[in-house]
Length: 451
Image 1 (cartoon, rainbow, N blue to C red):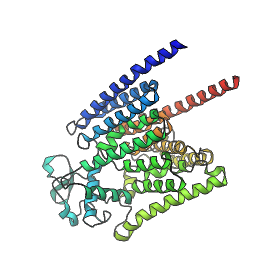
Image 2 (cartoon, helix red, strand yellow):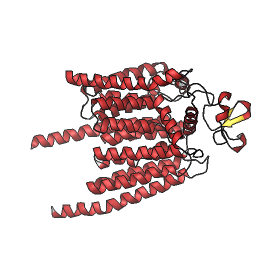
Image 3 (cartoon, rainbow, N blue to C red):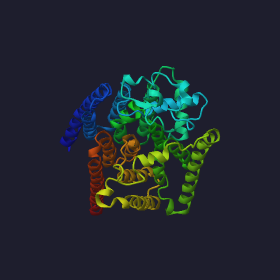
Image 4 (cartoon, rainbow, N blue to C red):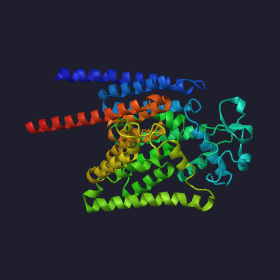
């Protein structure tokens, strides 16, 4: 027994430095990615950061609790900070954020005009509207160009996202460009890490702290999804009561509509009894009320639709017509295209009912992960920043096998031809994880029975 204890102590002594070394290499590779010249091929290097992330998590299993907490925090802050080292590497969305904030600071509703509208020409500057000869930008009328994608489309972002853009614009120096949104993303990512460390095992928090998707999408590309994810983590893992949970989830939905998919998780076990049902009804009502209250001011002051480009986006991404893009990729491997949408609705209804009926109300993040992860596997989205939500839910629940879903989203974005195979591999990993966990639970139960 003494020999086993010495052996375990020896293992923990080398595992800590090994994890630190892996994280240092990961941070160095991320830094190189973010400082690479525009147009560089990033997919291979980004894959390496995911491999280093997996290795660090695996090795950290033998690190004692207090030491693990320090490693997760220090390593997480270092990894998150790498996203600040260069301009957005793989997305132009933050340029729209800067524009929408500028428009609102000028007293104009962002839903009333597209960036290409000549009515807003007085707000243009050489950064967001550079000369076409300076690079590969988006053309607009009059022979001009802009960094803003879909310049002829009205904004798609919900009202609390627009409020966030305005706050960042008001607090930023005039020549700050994209950097304030990156800093805000880094602060939100670090704050989310602190909430996770307070509420769960440090090793679970590592799934968020060290995941390459966080510095890439939340910080470097500065996606507003990070604000919604922070609200979801506070709602489900921050010891929020039913009322606060409803307000926070409503806020997350009013930032980015995607977090609506976690609501069934917050209602886990709602159909198991009268008291649970009343709590669930209150949470849902508050979430809906917050979303409505967030939209109301923009409805009152806007001449255009506050839904903006939403319907155009749904059509453009192929969600309305299976086969138009690579959506519903896994379902279309086994079903006719015309069956894909009904199949999604049927499966999601079944999974949602299962979570609301049999989910654990004390672990709402577990049901949220199952519903959200299933939705991603069925829809196979091509934008990896949506899956920041899954990374956070994995950090709350600890079911690491779901991390294949955000990785598949990154593959679908950076190497579209491999998107469907990547999602298939992610689905297989989830099924394998479920089987292994069930087998492990059965072994534990049998061992207790023998005792």
